[in-house]
Image (cartoon, rainbow, N blue to C red; front, side, top):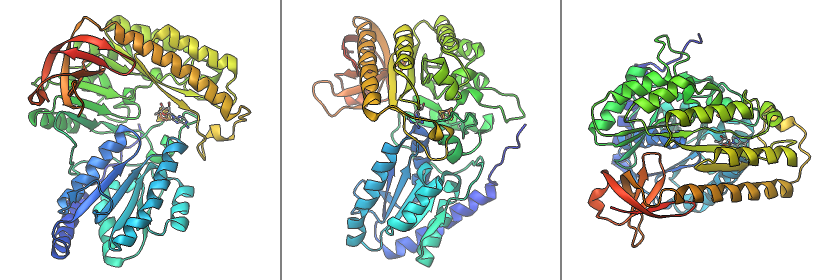
Length: 468
Ligand code: 5AD
Ligand code: SF4
């Protein structure tokens, strides 16, 4: 068993006392100090931003979306694909104007992108407006890093390599009051050959079940109705814990918390999905019948080159088993098109698998080369145009199947959780089915946060429409 590193509770208390020192000094110099936190990438990053906002709130900052108004800007970045990195760099570059207008503004860039050496170097050289850079492993000591920048007026880069630790007790400032993210583990040990995550987020490590259950209980007591358990690969939850609690056990523990709420989770790796998990999902009445199970490719050679450690056939049998336990399961997936060397025939296998599984929704990506990953040095003879052609065909199939799946809902009654306003007429409310499909409704905003029965009247590729 790998020892699980934890950040000592007194370390977090020290960070909180630094927050109070900042509060005193900031309040002395500005009437209403404001911060802006801009998040890119996955839900794990959203959850990290809630910690950044939690710390900033302790320091007395209010929040704004206006970069000209902000005294502090924190950009929480993603490294999974080049596109996200380009957007970040473009937006950081644009902050030249805001900093010119407000020279006291502090600009911080954190998250996965800056945990890569070449990116930190780029920011050091080409983006002098950035005052503070820190990787995911340093997030717990954001107050200390920020205070150092404030006191010394010098740029600070904190991006040392690390396997990562588990931290408890960082204050959280959550968005909304209906849906909540709950991180149950961090990092990844799988080393899929295209993926940068294991290099920037460190080794897989789980939070203790007691800490997770306590947080879930607080969420339920605060009125949250939809809790999404987060991890890069939740199916290997608990592998580094001595208690022997696995992911299915954890679901059961959360299901036992009294109250009317839903448990969702993401992401699952097909190689670790067990019958015990599906049985538990079926038996636990609060667990949504929703599974995000990335397949990435339908071709065995490509899957092997990706180091996914399952075959297309094995994936099909896992999906069938899940559906046997939950006939109403909403099954979604991720697919990468244009992995180095993927041929027309190999791509056809992916299409074939998609037609066979009939996913409720597919998240499709064109392969993006990541520095330092094994796939980056694999021969990649196909052009961007060829990959785009495959991508467009896959999108067509995905949209058609989602549309067909949604059409099957028409005329049925679904129990949905109303989660917000759309800002559009006449379908002014948005809601989610148990399986997580988006439903647009007409109704009073006082329904937000409530479970309702809805008759589905229409559907397209992206959403369902219904009446109370
Ligand atoms: N290129 C394209 N897509 C990627 N993903 C991960 N790494 C890459 C990459 N280098 C996709 C995978 C994963 C999702 C979160 O992002 O499909 O499941
Ligand atoms: Fe990346 Fe694979 Fe880990 Fe997912 S399971 S984060 S795709 S290495």
